[in-house]
Image 1 (cartoon, rainbow, N blue to C red):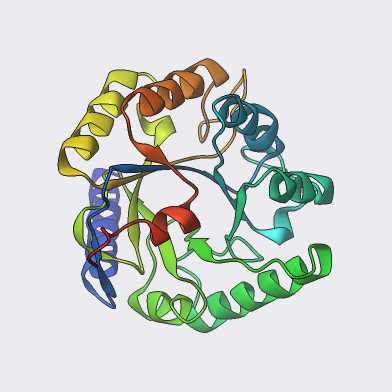
Image 2 (cartoon, rainbow, N blue to C red):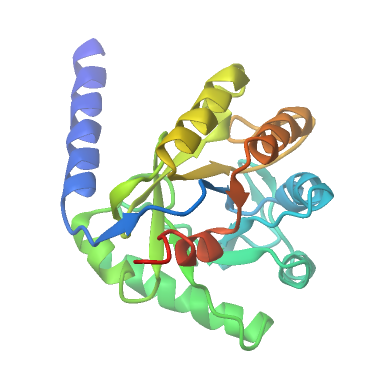
Length: 255
């Protein structure tokens, strides 16, 4: 079992390294003031009723990554969003991002099928919210294959992955780095240190999570924890924007 477990870890490390270093589209991230974005993958309903409420209390907006194949379904992070939730999120000024229609595993799914799921998600969104277009994407479950990155780049200004850090300087727009809140939900000070580091570097920190609930799934966090991190982000002096808007603000005026 130990040998098998080690083999899986090595395989996953190699996949992440390939994803990180191949099929890159390098852009400069050097905003005038540090940027922070709050994002929610899979869009469980509590991400809007819990997380969205906390953001609105500060006059902020987030990015909700939508896999329309999950609509009205029970998912590991709780009950999935409804059509009314989509409308509400858009009306309140939140960004809706793409998470593929079928919530495709970004490595295990073939690049062709992954692209088809992007197209299907776009088509279904047009039926529910005519005229609304996904501008950004979050890769589901794992880091993407290089060929998947190349295909996704045709449809989005930028695509988001993981890696638990922030973006600064030359950055891969096909695989922006993000920090999942739930990985430090027992250690909020670690996230506050990351906010400070992002401020010193004048970078772009993208936070990600799933549900925001009093009984969070392993993929989410509690409202009090989320509110604490949002409050600290606000007090840091960072500019807090949805991913699409932060993308536009990622460079200084001379860039």
